[in-house]
Image (cartoon, rainbow, N blue to C red):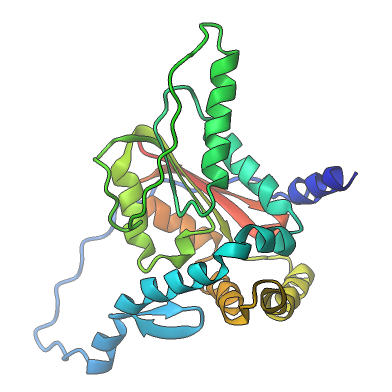
Length: 277
């Protein structure tokens, strides 16, 4: 009964998919005036800064700070995910993989894989499809673990059939670079899918969600993981992440087409997708 109720909560509040129109050609830039003012030093410094939660830090520091967060919470990562989402993160990841529609022989890249729960789902789905196939697919299935940089992937152009990233893209320093890399490594016809905590747009629910996020999540992190600060960052990073429409636009600007997103639980999370055509 609990699982059935969880499924209803995860999916009955899902909003319809939203498909973005193809981008219009950008207008030609206006010629710069001859008496252009010098850029203030503060603006130059800001261009080399980024956010770590609500704090401004230098770009070169962010990846180290994010790495420290996940190293700190690694031992309790799955437990905290279950507690914070009441187990719903498992259903959300199932939904992500179902939209990917894995097939035998596909070459897939799961970025920011954590403990591998998305990658294992993809692999199991491929095995399941292969087992059911009439011709009896018997190819080898393998899962490789690689430590790398989402903004500079070590894979060849057009080498992947699919790309997923779950609860990871808001932690990169330059989202646009990660999206560009996703586009680069995908084959023509390859699908990009991103599952990410997003923005609630139902007023009353948003107030409840804010209280839960800023009061309960850091406290839970302190009690269960012994790390309040890391979970405070988690909550703040969600609020700093672009909203659903803006992020969909960024995906489109990276070159993807047929960009759409699907809200789950009123926008607590969203699945964005796009195709490389």
